[in-house]
Image (cartoon, rainbow, N blue to C red):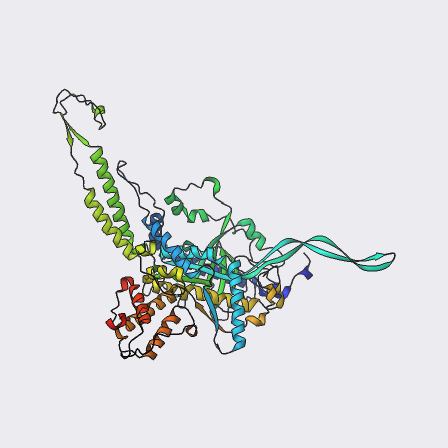
Length: 637
């Protein structure tokens, strides 16, 4: 590849974390200011000791959490427990699997309904026509980029982790991927007849070129076991930093440190050896819980990488700034530089399902009911053991009688050989399965009330329907109403932050017309001829999610209840206004409805027309568990 084929100013600017782009000579992987090699080595060792000590401390503090996560993981996969008595039942009910897998599609279907966008982009000044147009362009670009990032599939993993463990992480960075691609290039030559040019002749040649195949923001869902936060922090703002652990093949790491534009430094040092801890060893308890035997699948040619994002004085000016540091095997410094992003935020986004006050980690659906799940498993096992003892009874045998013990088997037509007729007596075991059924039902109801109600698992009650415009998801919104706060947190802590980071990365790296108009990179929007100026606007992101649906449902219920109680004394103007409000909350334009029934009826003052009365009564019947609305008798006449 020739140097003139590279866009060096863009290469200087684009820095990716997982799929790094080339970095120019002016941007060294290690940006330490030192007057001598000895001073430089000493500063590198200080950085290594700082990150390695933080990792050891934070890893040690997290061990108690890991034991809880391991128990949750075992319950999700219904891992059978081992007992000393092999004849006892060891069955494990898939109650956690049922809860998680029934809640995930409901929530995902609300957030990402087919044919609907899950977010809106609005300018800070909605009266500015130019900004409104830019907001539409930003939404179009972000929707395309999310689709290319396969965001929906990845976010399902995020939702599953947050429901299981209460906490989940995602990483947002700028991705630049270059590959060798084959292209057909037209070769044009004049076509002549008897020396007269009559046209142009086109032939095609195939050429191989090294091109950018992806240039966009990327989102990656991180495993909770690979993220090590500051244990003393309550939020990202007061955190000293966060560490991400990963592994890379030793030969791949060496390649990233070679060439004119190295990603990492010091990759040829002797300390960059194969790590004793590998990805497989970090997941050993998980694999053991599921009984997975890896055998020769383990890749032992791996180097451990610790990626630190946090405050550190890299340039030695005495002021700590946001830094990006990578060390290998806790011994070699590969990268140390200031945060490369203009937004100066750490690219890790944390989400929690139910927050614990003043704590970093949240609470998931499983942790509060771990003891109840064990109780339910115990009741089921005891019931099975009881049935086995009833069917396969034990015997009381006279030791002085000559009894053939091998014939002591309960089976039709069996004969027990004995010299004394009363030498063998059965030990009767009472059947207690009926009471065990009652106890199990109570425990299961407790688990459902604390996690996902039966209505959210698909057992809906007839008549309990919602009234928003998203008709297919009405039942879901009512069933998951108890998770309204948790879902609002999910929107505020993760989705909005992710979209904001996507937008900020676009503002930083999309700086010429060729990027958005390149059909190879953005085939879906290349025809729109968008420019970087079209996406430069101060915008806000609004989620069209379950929290909005639940809020609309609650307001509709309040208005309908109010109209049912006070409709007798309301003026026609008030009834018209409230009706339009309900229509708007359903997701429709209030100007699209004309109310002919909200008028005075001759002979009766301030009474609603029977047609409107029937509508209010019908709405009242749809209240479900929220109670019936008392409708004045005059409304039913």
